[in-house]
Length: 290
Image 1 (cartoon, rainbow, N blue to C red):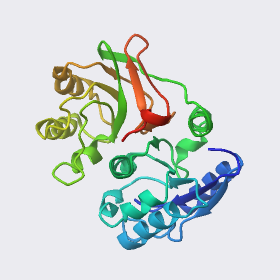
Image 2: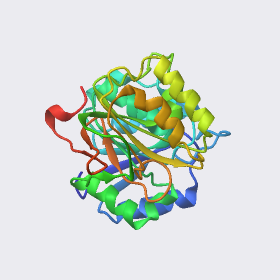
Image 3: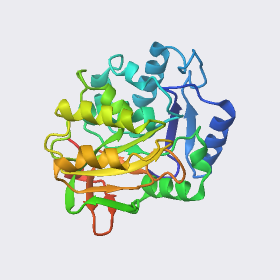
């Protein structure tokens, strides 16, 4: 991205707080970006940011707008998966590449943008969330948007090794919820990022078991574990379920929920290196997901 580009903000999941959204808009404008809002960005319908039809229409409209270079999701929550079969993926493919930014519930969109459009997407902090006010988070987001994001470093190596591959994954709960649907993920030949919030270890075990028994992890090359905010101590469960895959596993990366929140490109080539306990990646040409 470059200064002067237009960013559209939409709410495909939960309802956004107007005050937090306005603060996020000011921050983005301070980067020299032009910011436009989806028509229904501040709608509210129970736990959703308006009706499924309106949320899908907003996302479709800004994605297909040739003036828009990037689509930022205002926040997570719940509801993005309800839009997957309402979007005209052929029209979005015809519109050409855009940057999609979001995390948490936006995992559903990250996954399907990769499979339907073959595009990398940015897993990072959203404009109507508090994380964007953290200096480390904000600096890292700028690096990811305008240049080359530095490697993300964790604090724990669960299995040693080095692995390369296109990075996939995101929020564990959302990935598990896609099992049994036509959007069920496959991590064959991929590196996988996993994170979650407010899930007890037994629930993390259950979701991992579901993914493992569904064959989602067959052929995975490496695993990077992000933040597990309010999840107790999930490392024993994560190690028990993932180490039998016999691939490099690192943990403690500040990616997901919490602060600071680093940005990583999904759908682009990444490297897990346990010597530095890091996940690095870059964009460009054949390194993107196909």
